Each structure stands twice: as structure tokens, then as C-alpha cells.
Image 1 (cartoon, rainbow, N blue to C red):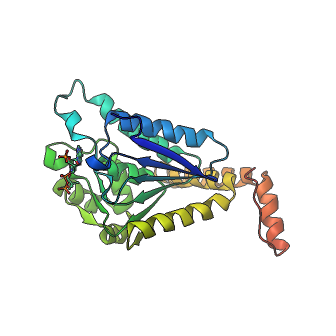
Image 2: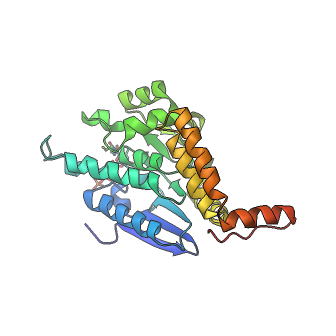
Image 3: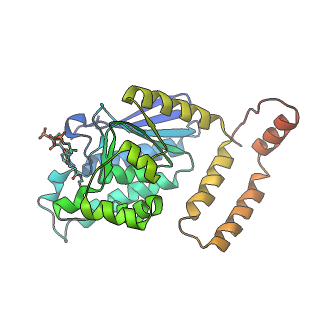
Length: 261
Ligand code: COA
């Protein structure tokens, strides 16, 4: 364990959180999961941060899953906190009020795929590989994989991926809707992710937060309740300074300058 296993850096209003165990393919041990939770909270609590990028160090892996070394001595009496912490991390990422972009620079397997799925948008390089290989260890996904994967790619495809444990290439992940965009190199991926983050950072922050809330609710609420929620949030956003600025800018034929209030 080293205190540098999760890096946190800020460029303007964009925070980049990097899983930094490249020699272990950024495998997610207990310490890394806790540090990721701390880093996400830090970004959430900082009003100057508008967008978060989550990535892995190096050019091999985003994260090759939970650290398998920690499974050796665990049984049903002792393993629950490990899965619970991973699930909590994913729920916290998904619940952030700011956009979180997964910049998937290599293997995103097991817990790596699961934390990528908890992010709002996934960009990947052509060398990225996605999968839930837990079956090959005699176990099942435990950071929310059986819950989020079917919602993103459909139940039949999720069952095939979880039952076979097979890895899929980035282009296939894009075809399935697991990835938004694929770039030809890790360098290009990082540039394009930074560009998207800068674009999103200029958007009105309250509107982003409320849109995300209604979109996330689409996974859990019945349609009628989700529509009620949307109209409530649509009403709420009309009291923001950003709505005044956005509408005035459009009608005055100028670019808006949002204050995120
Ligand atoms: N947990 C712990 N260590 C891991 C790991 C994981 N999930 N994934 C990779 N590593 C480590 C390897 O043990 C190896 O460490 P070492 O050099 O000290 O032996 C290092 O990362 C590189 O991995 P290696 O297997 O040598 O690289 P590869 O290019 O041959 O294969 C993978 C890469 C990702 C396909 C392979 O490492 C793998 O299958 N990892 C496990 C994936 C998995 O099952 N994840 C779900 C866990 S629930």
C-alpha cells in the first residue's frame, strides 16, 4: 500500500482522479477503493470543480478488477465489507452532482468495468478491453456489475458477458452502448477526454445536476413518477441565474456565460 495509489489533480475546474498501480494493472485493493471514495468526495465538495475525469495510470489498464490477492483468505463471513465498499464507491460516483467521465485507457475488467459503468460517460482507447471475468475465479461480480451491465447493454448480452467472462474490444463495447466513443491511441483518448471535460465545465452546473438526477432516476422510477420528477426539476431550474443568462444570451444572439447558480 502506498499513499500515491490514487492521484488527484486539478486543472481549472476539472479534477482528474487516477488509479495509480500500473505494475498491478491498477487492481482495486481495499485502500484504493477507500482513496477513490475520498477523492470523489473531495471533488464533490469543491464548488470550483465542475467535471471529474476518472482514469488509470499508464497505457495498459484502467483497472483490471478487484485485487485478487485479497480474495485468498476471505469467506462468506469476511468478504461482505469488500463488496459493500466497492458498491458504495460506484453508487457515490453515480450520485455525484457533477459529470464524471471514465477515460478507459486499457483493461476495464471486473471492478474496473463496474466503476466505469458507474460513470456518466465512457471514452476509451482502441486497446481498452471490457469484461466481467469473475466467473473464471468461481465468483460473480460484486461492485454492481449484474445491476448496471444489463441496464447498459441489455439482459441477454449481460448474461453472455457474465456467464462466459469473455473480454470485448473497445469497438464492440461501443456497438453495445457500453462506451460512448473510441480513440485510436491513449494519447488521443486523453486529449479528447480533456476536451469533453472542458466543454461540460462551461455548461450550467445546476442544469447539469438536475438533468443527471432525472436521467439517473430513469433506471429506478416508473415512467409516470420519472415524468413527475422531471417536471419538478424543470420548474426548479427556472429559478436559477443560469436560466436567465442562457435565455437572455440566446435572445441577444451572444454566447452565454454561466455562473452555475
Ligand atoms: N488483482 C491483482 N493483481 C492483478 C490483477 C487483479 N485483478 N490483474 C492484474 N494483476 C497483476 C498480475 O498479477 C501481474 O502482477 P505481477 O507482475 O506481480 O505478477 C500484473 O498485474 C500484470 O498482469 P499479467 O497477468 O501478468 O498481465 P497480462 O497482460 O498477461 O494479463 C490481464 C492482463 C488483465 C488479462 C490479467 O492480469 C487478468 O486476467 N487479470 C485479472 C482480471 C480479473 O479477473 N478481474 C476481476 C477480478 S474480481
